[in-house]
Length: 82
Image 1 (spheres, one colour):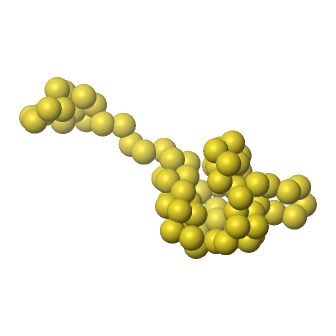
Image 2 (cartoon, helix red, strand yellow; image 1 turned 180 degrees about the vertical axis):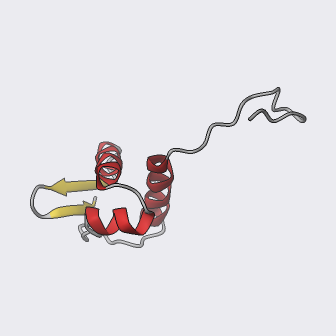
Image 3 (cartoon, helix red, strand yellow; image 1 turned 60 degrees about the horizontal axis):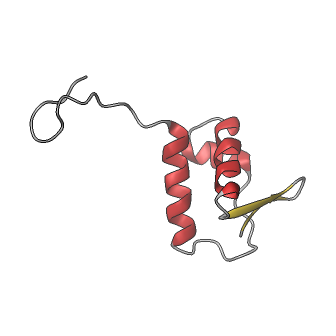
């Protein structure tokens, strides 16, 4: 699909990837203070169901957020707000 007009200069639109949507929303929720520091986020399974994505997608998103310093994951315990 090509969008014309304005300053788009015929740049094709690419659909947002599910992981990008999930990551953006989790960043927003973290910034809004939905979870306190050291508070556990919902499980990978719960997040996957909530966002309608696979658990693998949620795992990739959480790894990305951990690399950004927003969360920390403790094996067998869960993911926590950093």
